Length: 144
Ligand SMILES: Nc1ncnc2c1ncn2[C@@H]1O[C@H](COP(=O)(O)OP(=O)(O)O)[C@@H](O)[C@H]1O
Ligand SMILES: [Mg+2]
Image (cartoon, rainbow, N blue to C red; front, side):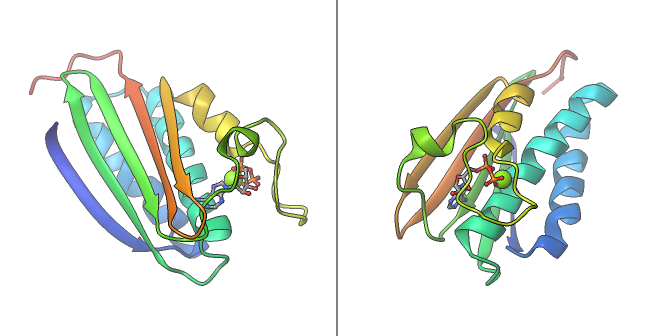
């Protein structure tokens, strides 16, 4: 893993813009296309808001975001919370599945992450928290 960056933000929705901005700033080092950058920001945004809303239920626990390049053109991003965790990961990842009853949640967060990134892995344990690992291969060649 090259050029690692680790940051920790309070898991509150007010920080969603900051989470997007950090992801954009990091990914920009690899000279991504505007489309790739939008996809990365959106995927990180979904993972971060999940940590804040579902993981910490608005209590604002710490969300870690880790960035790195696994190879010259491949970006790896982890979004980590130590919140509630997920009972059934496979079910949670199904399109339209949500445990939230409010009008805000579409149940499409994981689906968006999956479609915008090349690989999505979710590790989670009830009571221990959730780690979302996303990998994206960029079009542009990045000189390490
Ligand atoms: N970090 C997390 N901590 C706990 N539960 C989560 C987390 N991320 C996702 N989930 C669970 O997975 C479900 C689906 O997530 P998602 O696809 O983003 O839809 P939505 O956020 O609209 O509910 C959530 O409703 C929640 O139950
Ligand atoms: Mg979501």
